[in-house]
Length: 143
Image (cartoon, rainbow, N blue to C red; front, side):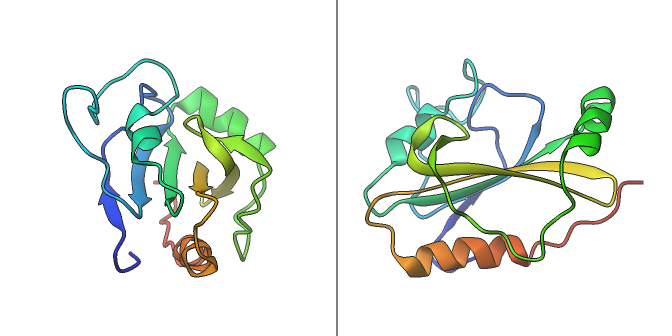
């Protein structure tokens, strides 16, 4: 995990499947009555939206674990890339601002989504750390 980043493995939106594996962000994702990290409605994440700053960055890994959905996804998504290119072209993932995106991939019989986003003032170093984190992920094959 990059130094100075914050980790949560809780769901940050209302999506149950795919399952959130983790979310890393450069600012803490605050719990509270209006910023619950628990169940919420839909795919948008108010927690992530409210943590957003001009220098903010986040990366979220989710996994498709439902049998039928996973099989369908495995037929449609590419194998894990050697290097993750985080070149967003618009709003992505949990309804975060522009310069956010999504990458799908499979590895070892498992199917994943990566959601990511960068504020307009996020440094190149933050962007590089996010890509390096993803490049270094170790994923075990499905049993």
